Image (tube, rainbow, N blue to C red; front, side, top):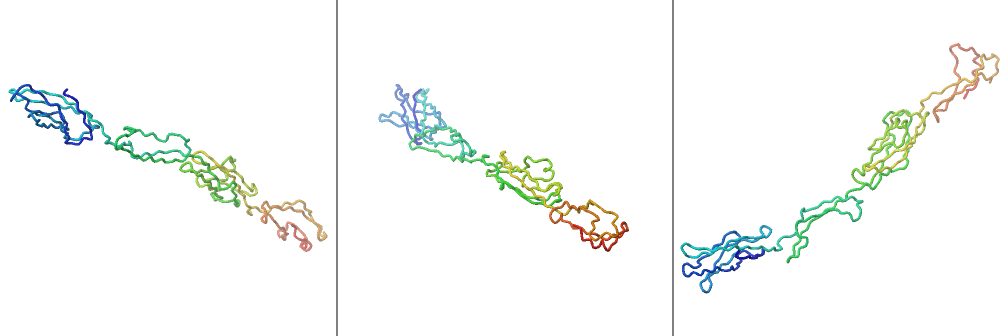
Length: 329
């Protein structure tokens, strides 16, 4: 090994580095005549003439060095005399390339995207970035690398759905067609995505009510599904539930009043009947007691009664006195 040599990546091509010269004790033609360099394209050889005519070899940098490509360069220097046959001497030269601060820190990604739930505890690790480089750059001039980290705050299901009303009220006439829209409930949820998507359903409702009404799970529309009879049940009260995609719920009450329709005929019941009626019965004689009932309500349940003339000869009576009997209510 002739010796080691230290080069710097910042050294410009064309730079020269003196090498120790070779010695040959012979004289004249048999003495040292030339040098040759081999082993690496980054270097070439130059020979300068000394004051006494001696040859002084110099190592010339022909191509810029890069420590990240090669940290060492192995060269072979040959000294050749002029004898016949020529004799040579060789020396190995090891060039160690010193690092220069010619590289800025580089992140493994140009941009980092992190999704963080809005309810993440304080102090939680959001992202870990691993760099294949020196963490601290102390070069002169110093180099720096930048990266953009984008943190997307994802929604947490921290808001329950909320009905717009505590109690919803509606009125519907009895005997409605199936599928009639009665009312629509609505609940909102401040969360996003599936956490804010609300579905509707019956709460703790008897099966009898479930057979009379339906609730649309998406729209909250309540429609009729079975026969509604005012005389049987004039009011229905039941609960509805709103649930979001994360399982949080809210509840409301629905009150549906059934209004009466004139769908029942009056019913006449004979309580007492005097038969036959004496022909000399005085005016005002009570000949029958009747009870009239109509299951409908309001004006639909109010009835009036009157006597009609008998034409089928089922009864024989004096029409004149009887015609003066006032109507029975």
